[in-house]
Amino acid sequence: MRDSLDSKEFMDEVKYHSRQKHAFLKAYLDIWSEQVGKKGKTIPTLDIYDMFASYGRCKCSEADEVWDGSALLAARCLCEYSKGIRLWLNSFNENPDDMAKQHAGLNRWLGTLEIPSRVKINLDGKPIEDAINDALKKVNPRYPSLWILDPWSPSQLPWEVVEKVARTEGVFYTKKGKVTRRPELFINLMTSVLQRVSGMTDGQEKALDIALGMPTEEWRSRLDEMREDGLDTREAIVEIYGSKLADIYGKRPIALTVPGTEGNLVYTIFLVTEHEAGYYVMLKHRLQKYFEWHQHEWAKKAKHLKHTRKGIRRAEKAGLKTSLDEYFR
Ligand SMILES: C[S@@+](CC[C@H](N)C(=O)[O-])C[C@H]1O[C@@H](n2cnc3c(N)ncnc32)[C@H](O)[C@@H]1O
Image (cartoon, rainbow, N blue to C red; front, side, top):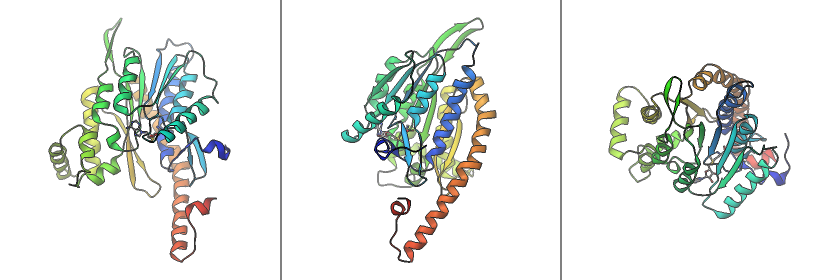
């Protein structure tokens, strides 16, 4: 799909690795629209809260591609799923001009969809600590809700915020007895940043205090213990985060490692769902499809980009005046 230059102004410029995040999110959302929402079944209502909604569409100059961001993927899911009733978007930016652009982008891209009147859309623009309180006032925890928590940096998503959502418990009764329900979570934990600052002592390491919700001494001693057991720092951080979620949900989250095009590991996505069928379908079927896509499409293009970049670096070394921007113009 080609978009005009003008419309590209209202898109988030992203790296090619984030294509994987959106493909994984789509794989999960498709379970709702294609499976849970199958005709003929009695289905519950669904709300989606995208708390770091950004522009709604992404552009990747390096790969010369555009695709849907989390907000548009969520909107499409709620249109398809016949009991989708609320799309809550929080799109905040410290720079007011950028925030206005993000909101304009969201309005613009949502305007391209035919959104049924049953889907109510709220657009908020606050730092996450305030935004989460606005959103939680609206949620009915007895019904399914999905929370997309996708910040730029780990300290933009304090553990207290995650825990506030995770502990929003709804109780209802069926013929089988009492059932409790918690929100489903899609969390992007920037493990590469956490890994890098974990050995620092200049204050940057506080990002782990915030993201993991524990004092420096505690995560330091836990990381040391786990490294003695053979885990690397990234794996240990993932283990600590995953077990904190498992303590609340009574079930381990699905964790997807997202590599950059150079092969470095950039972030880990945690998917927490209490929905037995959703968990099973994701693990057994959708992930398999995701990995097929990853192998046949994403990895191929990533390899191509890596080689192109290498060529450019070589040319730059040889004194040729070129840059990625010029190359892709
Ligand atoms: C990685 S982007 C989100 C991308 C989006 N989820 C998507 O898939 O298209 C992170 C977003 O968080 C916003 N942001 C930055 N600091 C924030 C904060 N303290 N609270 C809430 N949002 C914040 C940024 O403006 C940016 O739009």
